[in-house]
Image: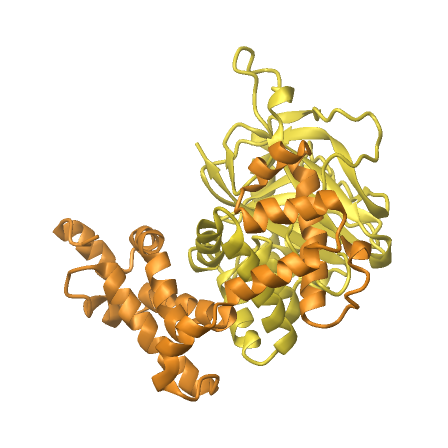
Length: 269
Length: 184
């Protein structure tokens, strides 16, 4: 798993997935790794050349400093985690066709976010799209207003995803879920409509192109920090085992072979 | 900006209230980064110090209590400069401390990068060359550049992603300069 590698901290830092621990590790690592220092220099200087470079730098460095940290009690049980998830099910409003314009399962209109997730080889990644409700008819999605999610999404919006899954990684399945600062889990893929069910990962295509997942999903998200997780694995996993693994934090995902992609967003009102 | 609005706010600051510290961070970041940058010209070192200053502000009540009022940015900037000097001594990346300010006026890594960018971009396809010009020479946002080029923003994001990887490899001397189109 690349996520926890020291070199990968650099990619995570610039792709908006920093954590405080990750940034501390990164800056310590940068003192001794010339290759990463070079990469950091290039990316930081390019950032400065951009129109809003100062703001981007502030956001980039602030992400790790002010991450929401609400560690759950060490003894929290897997059962409690399942209870959280079941609560999430209750609040799940539903899934609707995503308003992507392409009818093909593979499309190239969008590409994955993520700056430089890794320099050695392309890694699986997700792109997140916000789909607001229609103002005149809140039961419908405002398809024409779909846009790539930045660092902030609004409560009430549906989220849609596309993925890139390079063949070399060997991942054939994905799970997409979100975890808020309180540790509550919200499932996007697979859908989880009945607490008694234990659905498994979604089979995905391999290749360099973006592939859309053609449903937008809405949860009753509360304002605050929300980490979106894409769990790319060679074999399918079940939601119950993943829920148990993340009961004490996302580091529990280390138990699974594959690649973890994350992005932390802010949910606003 | 003077950060002594009212006793309640100061009390929250002394307690290390994350919202208050974040507010301070947003208002003082540029000044603190600039102060660290006068000593440390390497972005990784400069940002490490900035990170450290705010981490300490978050975690050390002693540090917060040492602020007696006045310009928070100037206070944190002075701390950043001291920490940068300590950092330089520790890491031995700057041996002649008396030459700090002189060095700051002599070398401008941004100018160097701009020159390198122009050289590198000259070998790219015209559209991508134009993207580099708009984004990194003219300082346009991605949205503005997308409008000028008539391309979806997501396409530019993809190009930039590839471009950054190629440029990083090029600057690190890992990739032959002769074939940048390959990675553009």
